[in-house]
Image (cartoon, rainbow, N blue to C red; front, side):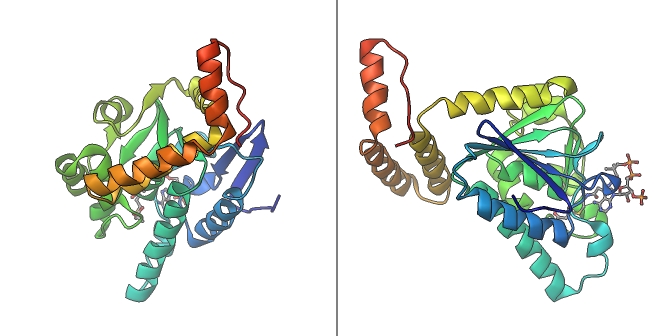
Length: 261
Ligand code: CAA
């Protein structure tokens, strides 16, 4: 596997754990890190050994404390638009991976860090996690998808409050409003994320992939178009050996053995 300067990548039993690893800067996303992420996720999209991806942050206190303010400070209009487009492209690559991506949020998830977590399919947070979009305190707005994905996840009213007040959310509040799927003690974070990963891995892989695809695509469509898309993906499932296996096993009251075919 390629060597990365700011990422640690480890694949074991179908689970690839990606650690954003710049702990001295609380894993702030600079363009070098975003370039590495783009490269990695393009590889993982085609990697048959990776059944599920977990993203977490290196060090003790942060998932990702945002885009790198040191780098952003010097950007002009064109450069900052390109920086925003780079972050958006990386996060869209995550959202569109065929595999399910779980964010294991171990600490500060601020600005670009909250946006990274939101680009993942599922968020599990430790009780130490803190969420927020502090951008307007810096004279900017969220630029890696935050104005869009936060509103999709928690609704327009709450998204406007979080972004315009810059109030930081403790994990209980993030859980209450649906920003995170589960909250656990810090020492249980990776264990919980891996248990969920293994549960998903045990299901029919093509069906999981088609379900993720239908949910994602449907979000950008009218209900009628989304339903038509769902029916097409439903139909594709019936071309798989796993559909035959799943239904046969159910009717025989046995455990299905899925092959991903
Ligand atoms: N960019 C660059 N460096 C950062 C950073 C960031 N986003 N976040 C933290 N760091 C650096 C700090 O500058 C500090 O570096 P030095 O040791 O060289 O001073 C180091 O990480 C440790 O941070 P602190 O000493 O500040 O740690 P703390 O525990 O006292 O505070 C914190 C933690 C509340 C997260 C604080 O670091 C902080 O407020 N960070 C900035 C958060 C932020 O504003 N994020 C949004 C960025 S804008 C964005 O993300 C735009 C977008 O949508 C694309």
